[in-house]
Image (tube, rainbow, N blue to C red; front, side, top):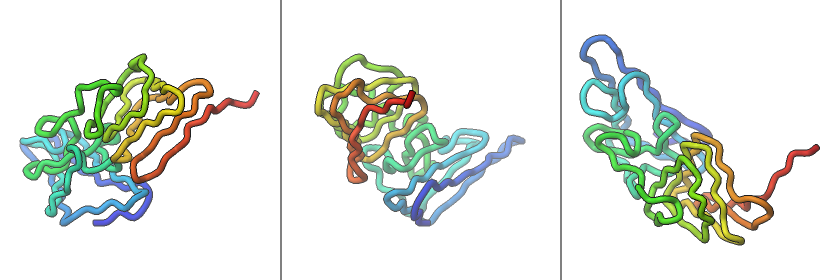
Length: 188
């Protein structure tokens, strides 16, 4: 399976009566730049042992810093990881690597960071693998600094404010693109 553009998804539904399982097996999966893939499930926990749904990929995907890439998510709320036995699962779920315990200002280029609140610390140039925002958050920068996400993965599950005032700042989504962040004011 190859995705070419836009938002793509795979969904699997686990029956809720008796002992059952549901599995979807793909021979391979390739995501083209500019496209995203969301793995979704109804009932159970994707990639968990027991009576739970599984999405397996015969040609095991290569994980980079524990995720399939910045454009792969599970249920739209977590970055996707992979376990050869149980298939696709959410980063941080049982049987899969977790998010970094470090705050955004202390994390490194291989860290997948999940934040739910502002740290109150202005960032200098900062490089992370990916960033998931789970609660209303503000990330402020020292003047002229850049936040780089090497996987291109920015997952927003809540409101995010990047910078304040007229600071020059940018968000670098790795090989995908660099976005200068400018103040936006609503017309009166």
